[in-house]
Length: 95
Figure (spheres, helix red, strand yellow):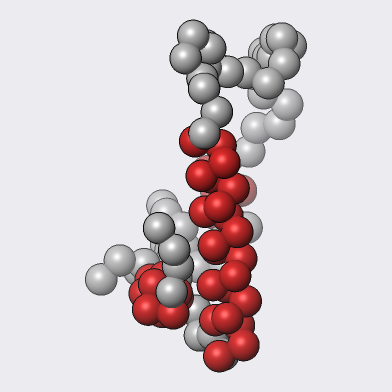
């Protein structure tokens, strides 16, 4: 598979990017290099090799959750730029 200008245009549209002609040419070159590298990786025989789950043998040292400071409902609402009696008021995100 090779990347052409039409493919870059589709990807740019999906990513909401506006690319100049020079930027498109650079993208074509870069994306084809990436695909070339992926082709090289696909040539490697990985039969019998277990997938790598973790990069190191380190174990996460989880800490206990400890409440360090408590604030009341009213104190929390004081920090809100907009609020009503009970809740933070935020702009509607999904229409």
